Image (cartoon, rainbow, N blue to C red; front, top):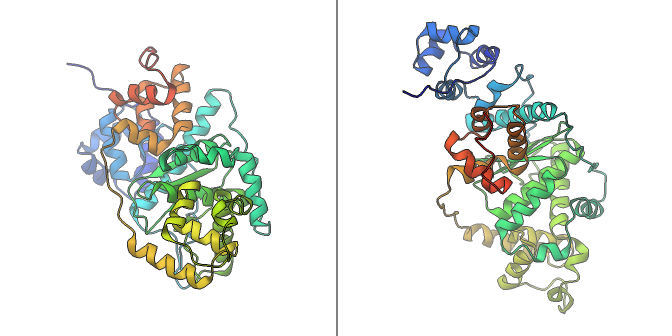
Length: 395
């Protein structure tokens, strides 16, 4: 019989996670379907759980499995500031799913920092910085320059998924890790950011449309640039605290201008040929601009309003029409390997695999960091690294 893979983890993390979950040894052993004695052996370091047993523990403790491979327990952190909160409501995010995604983001960041140390390398330092007193249009142009986006590049994306992939890669090239959350409704969270440097984090909701995720990434980039991370639904609400409302309005304004710069919009034939700048726009015209910049129709409308090309009344009317016509996204089949790539991103995966190639981590650790079964890693390697020859070659 083949020997089951043992998880080469830090036993201190088992004790830490159990206590943080508020579980006794008896309760934790029951969740993991093992005896109290066995769990105590794991916690003392005399024995180690198998990878499957560790996954069961991680599920019971509501922790990402990668956290157990850290060299020390991660530092406690304050809940991310919640920019969805109404003024009369205290507290941060409530749902267990959202809290788990926040913990996953912090754990992946800690893992990435340790992996960089193992490679004797330092993460890229983000060069984009801003203040809410900056001119949104000017800041957007600076961001476009730093990311390397041009009118020509945007016109060549081909479809919204390629557009989203390009924007994500451009953020990763700036030293930002971009992840996607899978188990949260869009109404609860469209994006959040962790602004600690190096390696700030942006997380967007995989259930959102690709164009909406592009906007969320840019919105959260501005949060990172001003070093005020938060959990966002991107709605502007006058009931927020004044500072929160100021930040959200600013982030939305800059994100929209980054996608659709004022100068580019006024170069469009459809704008140049109009008799009246505030005349009505047809659905086809709005859809055309949406495809041109791979931005949602709502973002197009907002940019038309800010640039003085439509009235407030027309904006409100069209926005309600869009909301009424909004269709749920259809779900297609995605392989576990492709899902892992979508969730964790190419930058994080390359960092993990580079450490594996240099024998800094084991194949089991690769699978755990990417939250997949070992059998799927070769496919991930082929898609991200362009080959499938090296994985498994190192003992």
